[in-house]
Image (cartoon, rainbow, N blue to C red; front, side, top):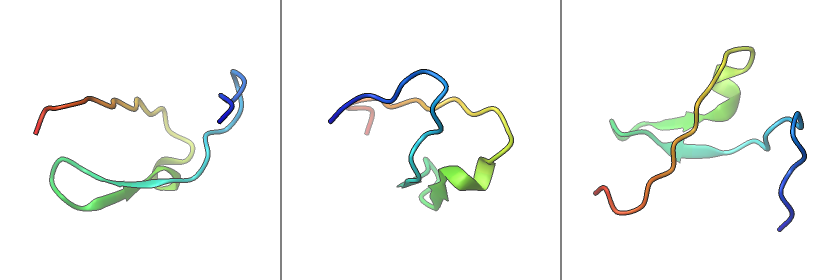
Length: 42
């Protein structure tokens, strides 16, 4: 898998939130978003 170039829009994806509900990246379109992926917290 190739990494996207800087400034390229992120691909669409959906992940569970810490509260358990699914969250889609497009739900936050037009806003600044920080994605934090961590291994082994739960």
